Amino acid sequence: GRVGGAKMATTAPPDNAMAALREKHKWHADFVKFLLHAGAYKKVSATGRTKLRDHGEMIAAAGATLSECRRCLTEMDAGADKDEGEASAFRREVVEALAGTSDVVADLPRRWDDLQRPSGTDPDMDMDMDMDMDMDINSMMLTLSCVCRGLGEAFRYRANESTNLYDIPHHDPTLCGKGTIPWTSSTEVLAVLHQQLEKIQLFGDSVLSSSSNYEQDKLALKRLVEDASVSLLAGYHDHFRCDPQNEEIARLYDEAKRLAIPLLRTSYVNEDGDDIQALEMSLKHSCFEGIVQICHDHRRSWKFCGPFSPVPPDETYDIRLMLSGTSPESPYVHLHGSTDYRTGLPFCDFVLNWYADRGSNTEVLELGKECSEALTRFLRNDNRLGDLAWIHDLRIGAHERAADTLVNLTSSIFRGKDAGAPMDLWENEQVMSLAKLSNKLARSKNPDSALVARNSTIIENSLNLVEAQRILQEDDLDGDGSEAILPPDELIVLAVNKINSSRDVENIKKYGLCGLAIAHATSSEDAIAMIHGAATIWEA
Image (cartoon, rainbow, N blue to C red; front, side):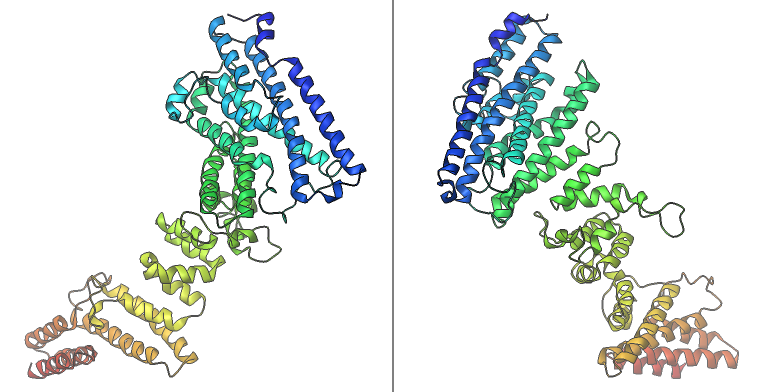
């Protein structure tokens, strides 16, 4: 049943704690003003001023934490459906966790950590066990509310008082080093935020489903997840900015991205499904996985719109603009100076690899138009799209390389290499025709190239063999070109059989010329086979 107001008064944060904090803040402000008027403040370094401001922020955050705790307990008491003993035990644990907050405000991060654990819980206890110990909607919402309200008040204090009281900028990105990272980005605070978001990730939906006021609690949880995610990522960004080579910081920053950004896409946070905030956070913190996944999920808003559509593309999710945004004035230029923590890949390479991992070769080639150098590098180093590299080579004018790639795509029998199953007639003819055109363009640029000359011979021989097979099998072919191309030795046998079985002199001449052409088209590296093939034809 509901617990009465008199009982509540004995277990809520006492009013004298709030009064003590107000007095502390007055003394603190008076002390800073005294230093200023005495002329001593100008001797205080930027780090020292930041520490002074941190203390003022902690006082403000402590007051906001106690105030929020009182509000939450009052609301829980008004709508409680637990028995009096259980409700009293819960409130008692909360008040015990925050006891002494007004005495030592520097311990506030530890108080928040105590608040998220039931009394007597081992800090190293497994998360699932922790949640089984009565971590319901009340305890989770209260903890996150107190932490977010405290941080929010600290940020407001910083915005209002940095210049007025402490004579330092609200945020100075040029200051990096020990003592310059604000307390709101301390490892203790970030650990609490991370742990709270992990609990919401695991149990947010199930906890909300047991709520007696689902819509109200969902809205509250949405705001809290947004605030906690922004604070968590901003905190690790502060550390990473000051020490980008620190492996542990980079790892924790990456884990924070992979935790917070998917949470911003959950149904109770991103009810409209637009993923705007998740995309903004992904872009701001160079979370490549989040960027690509969100843009891919919303690809219908940009990929299928354009000059032939009545609907203009939505540039918000257009990853093509992000891939090509390398100019200094682009809002995406910072992405190209970052790398993915887990793969070590720069942005463009990561996007191409992401689509290749999912077998979307068309997307790789299309998106590669926006980052030609990255696509060239990808095609050279990753053999998954090796058979399609010639498309990009033609696009960028690398005709010699395109011709060589196309030649290598055809049956290995022409170069004496084991390249797998040969193509059919139609495929071979099409590929070699493309190679011939590309090789001609390459010759016009570099007429003395040995590779161009070699490929020219291979291409002509290949096309001659295709034509010879067509003539020899003109009565047997279906006409669709789907027949497998035969190696030269089998074609020689076929030519001999045709000669021997024919009674028409003109046909015998035709088959003989085909046989000689086949022998001539045999790899120049195999001169003996060429001579033997020609001799076989003459004997026939």
